[in-house]
Amino acid sequence: MTGFFGGGSQGVGIELTPLRMQVAQLEKRGASLRLKALAAAEMPEGLIQDGQVVDRDGVAELIKNVMQEQKIKAKRAALAIPSHRAVTRLVKLPAELDDMELRENIENEQAALFLPYPREEADLDFQKLGLSRGEDDQEQVEVLLAATRKETTDGYLEAAQKAGLTVRSVEITSFALLRALREQMRQTFTDREAAAVVDIGYDNTEINIVVNGIPHFARDVPIGVLEMQNAVSRAASMPVSRNPNWAQTMTVPEEGDATMPTNRPGMALIRVLQELGDELRRSIDFYRDQPDAVEVVQILLAGPGAAMGGLDEYMSNRLGIAASCIDPVRTLNLEVAQEIPPAERSGLGVVLGLALREA
Image (cartoon, rainbow, N blue to C red; front, top):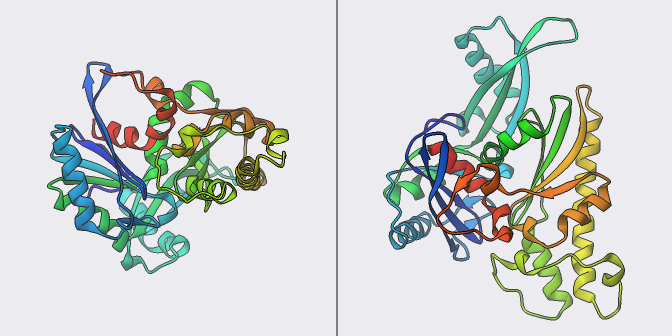
C-alpha cells in the first residue's frame, strides 16, 4: 500500500458500499480524460457491514465477476475506506522541521494525540499542504493526517488481492470525492470561502467543510439512504427492499403536501430530511465557531442520496445556503462513449476520484 495520498497509473478505482460496488477506469488522452469503463453491481447482503469487509472471498468474487463480464482489464486498483472508519486531522507544525523530524513528530506525538486506538494498530499517513503563519507570526507547515485500523485496511486489501489485483492505495472516501471536485472548487470559491461537501451514502452521511480543496472540518452522521427508505416503507406499510437506485425514484415532497393525512410516506421522508438538515446546520455552526473559519457559501450534495429530486432546493430553503448536486462527469469534462443519466452522476464522485488517482 502506498498510503492514503499519492498517485498511480492505468488502474481502476473500486468503491465498495453495503448496497453497491462500482468500478471505474479513466484513460488520459493528452490533456483530456476518457471514461474507459464504468460498471456497477448490487452488493449481496452481509458482505460489507458498517464500513468493514466482512466476507473477503465474497467481495473478491464480485469484483472478479464484474470486471470479467464488463471486459475491464486492469491489474492495479485504488480503493476507499468510508470516512467514519477513519480518523483525519489538519494540524500545524513548526516549519523548520525537516522531513525526518516531521515524520517522527507525527508518528509519535501527533499520533498519540489524535488516534483513539494504539499506534501499532493503525495504518497512518500524512501529506504536507503548505505554509502559514501562527498567532505569534511564526511560520508553520499545515499537515493533513489520516489513519485507519489495520484490521479495516486489511479487509479491503485482501479482498482486492484475492480478486487478482495489486492495490496501489487505500484512501478515505472523502479524499477521493474531493479529488473529483478539486478543479470545480478551485474555480468557484476563493480562499476566503468554504463549501460544505455532503456525501449522502447508503448507511451514513459524510460532511466536510472544505477551503481551498482541503477539509478543515469533518463529521459523519448515521443518516443515509437506507434510513430514508426504511421510514418511507414503514409509513406505506410496505416491506423494505434493498434497492441501490431507490433515491433516484424519489422526489422530496413540498412540506405542505407532506403534512396531508394521505401522504404518510412523504411525512416520514421529510422527518428524516429535517433531521439530516439539522445535523448539517450543527456542523456548519460548529465550524463557524473555529478561530480560522471562513464563510460557508455553498452546499455540494453528493452520493446516491443526492439523486433524490428536489433535494438541493429543499436544503437551500432549510439552511439558507445555496445547495447544488455535484456532476463529476461534467466537472472532469470526461469523454464518455455512452450518456450517463444526470440522476446517476451524483453517486459517481468517489469512484471517479479513485479512478482519477490511478490515471
